Image 1 (cartoon, helix red, strand yellow):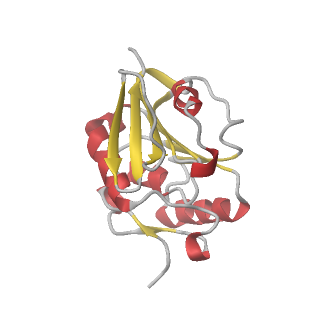
Image 2 (tube, helix red, strand yellow):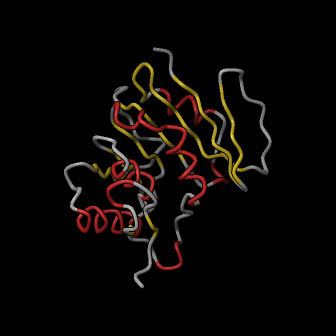
Length: 177
């Protein structure tokens, strides 16, 4: 069986995205967290572009396209992960739907054009400010979602929703319309 990360829903359900051997240097978003993310978003995916900061293998961006996002942007700066992303896009025939940006996610800049911005950085580098950084790329009514480690308790403002899934939490904030 070909190594990789299985897409769990949509038109590419059951297909795999490429992954580096041993999954290093990436830490793929666990399947249960991806399932929860897309369950929370539901039809919101179809409302606009999806951005996957710290994309790694791109499994979240590809899953977003698979489940109805009209386009996705995957931001990653690791050479091996970028090679895997490009191979996956080619194998799935989504080069026109998936923009791959070779950049550091914290240096990435874009006008607020996305409906959903998801960030799953290395947990050692994660900061509370990243949620607001994600919101800068969201258009009004859009969603910023951060994967946060469950073992790092954090007080969040009232307008932030937090849901726990094993060793990860999804931290969700909607930009005012």
